[in-house]
Length: 355
Image (tube, rainbow, N blue to C red; front, side, top):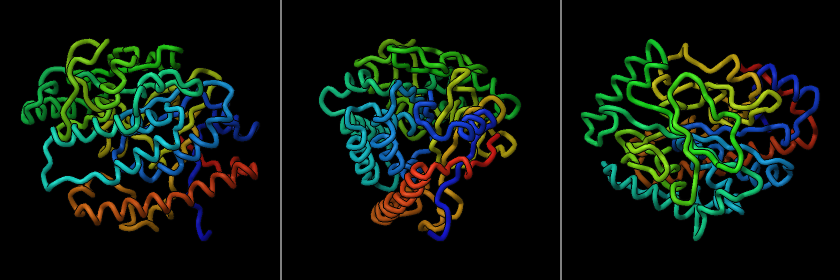
């Protein structure tokens, strides 16, 4: 292999544990999944490896926390055969086909179809009874103008949040409140995230589909989900608005966070993407192991990048599907490298500083 396909960045706490003890998947209490739409396709084969080869080795349940596409990925992990669920989701996601200007109603209907493909018959109960994982989904409850479906009103709410966010992330609360949908079997260690108001709603067979769909309901692109069962009445949308890549300590004192990610850094919220000075650090990254594609690997892909939502605009359906399939196939190289590193016990030597 001419270049490394993966980067491994770890916070100080994670570095100490991994250097002293090596990689033990049971040492990770939490696995985080970021927002990012089609970018997840660069991780789909890594997801299969983790779900199929690492997850069965665990002796304790793994807390999954996903926002937006991270919630969709983790709904697959929660199935009895997660590898098959990931494959169904990958196939359906890649094969999406739309006209030039699909409506929010069209895209929302497609996401509902995705969930039914992942879940299968009785899948909601399976997602909440898997002994190896605890599914947790981050969405937002909208306030004021952001709660309306009319684009101009919704846009006003987003503008108010974005403007306030320039000064402080706490200003997001003018338009958005966190909504954590949690597996009620065990209280997650991230039950009390700071900085923004947060509703805590127990997942159930009656609301898990709505929670996952809401978590990925991109403002102005998909319809929001109104009045979710068991949650405070209101409109729910994409969890990435407040927690794009997360910016909080997610594990308890002795737990680590495993974070397969499409980037080698973490952006707190959706409105922070263009704010280069605002990156996660400190306690939020202390116990994190961030695993991401290397810059050289990304540069080797078609168009020199990983998939993103602009592909729907810049490429026709056939071009996009071919490109996305190529990225998925190429990502198998990351799995090979990760497997070799774990087998050889060489991960600690590859660690870079995160924070």
